[in-house]
Image (cartoon, rainbow, N blue to C red; front, side, top):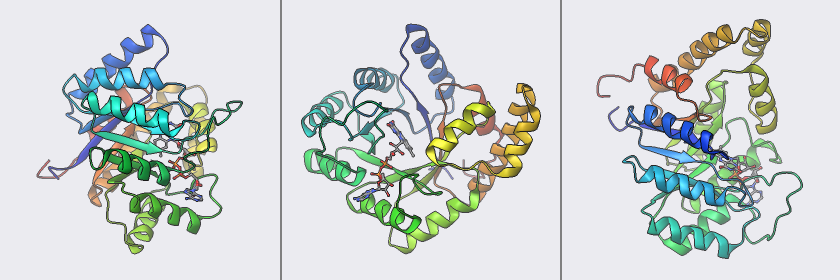
Length: 281
Ligand code: FAD
């Protein structure tokens, strides 16, 4: 268990105040010695400069930081420039994605259409410099034609040169096991790390889950609905449910956990510190 891979994801903030909060959160999470922090990227380059500056700032603070990089809406030239800047700034891990353009934003170029093409491009441009993470969807990507097709598209990203994968969050643990079994049967050997979303706010979570295709099981949804505005009970129940799921994943031998922190320390630390990682941790 000593090589268990812990990582925390942040999003770039727009305000000075948000940035200070992000760095304070980072400091609290750094005490757990994660393998890396990651910072999301607004598809189409909307957070290009902010992702770059946060990731370089974090990277210089002792724990490696990885930018997310999406290809939809960015040209090859723009991506090449960014890759070079990351290399110059000592970044050696990237979360490579297709991305989703915000509604109303037009793709400026269709040069790279899918994440497998981005992975291939990064490998062509920079060889093995970057450890490349890609996204995995145990409950199927919402725009996929069907589950089988989505599995094959995941395999393409691995064959293009991804080193490991991080899943969309899920609360149906069986969907994760099934996904892993199925892609392993297709020859995938890279680590597939579960993405973990702590439960702190029901309405936001429900909205988000609808959009990204993560199912909230009925028994969890009903219980969260029943709590209404009782935030304290939602958070207590959420911590129990997510801890139990993470403990089972750990007991089953997952290679790591990746927390979608939403720039908050407490809910992520609570779950993480509840876990028993085994003898060698
Ligand atoms: P792809 O792997 O390209 O898949 C997208 C869709 O196209 C799927 O339905 C797939 O089945 C299909 N497909 C894939 N390849 C092919 C092909 N060759 N031919 C035909 N169909 C194909 N979004 C952001 O904008 N910024 C972020 O920072 C960000 N971070 C994320 C981090 C993680 C860990 C995860 C899980 C998601 C993140 N997302 C982010 C969301 C992600 O960008 C969206 O889910 C997006 O819709 C798909 O990205 P992808 O890299 O999975 O795409």
